[in-house]
Length: 197
Image (cartoon, rainbow, N blue to C red):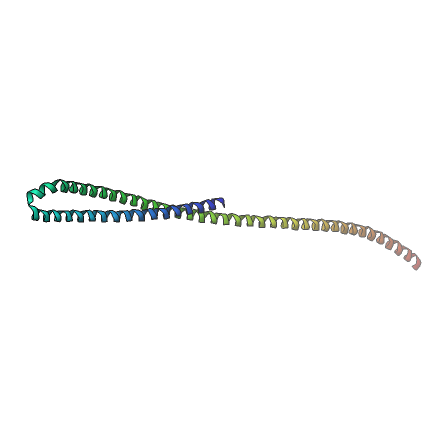
């Protein structure tokens, strides 16, 4: 029974871990979505910057504005590319983490399934052991009853033997009595024969 309790606790811990990893996966997915949104906003800002630069160039003259805008635009372009690279790397790492968590959840589910099967098997084994113990109890009870019946039969056989011996003794006594009666009858005939003459 302790093993069944341990398996139930293990299964509960795995289910808690899976629920927690579901939360992490949702958070990572939200972070990925927000990262994609940030990249889209950066591209939008870059487009607005280019449009502003184009408008400035048209209104003030290309050479003046070009020098003023070239360095910040170059830095903005570089920063945008660096941010995009970082976000892509973050997205890649996030996807790898989600994949690992999903694989971990699959292994945890398999582990829970195995624990449930083991728990069911242990329950079945426990029921079989209890059934065998019950059968052993019945067998022991039947053996006690059989012993009592054997004792009764043994007592009856002894009584029959004693009765037979008593009967045999009676038969022997009757035989002696019959012999004595036969002798007496012979003597009686002799006596009666004397009176006839």
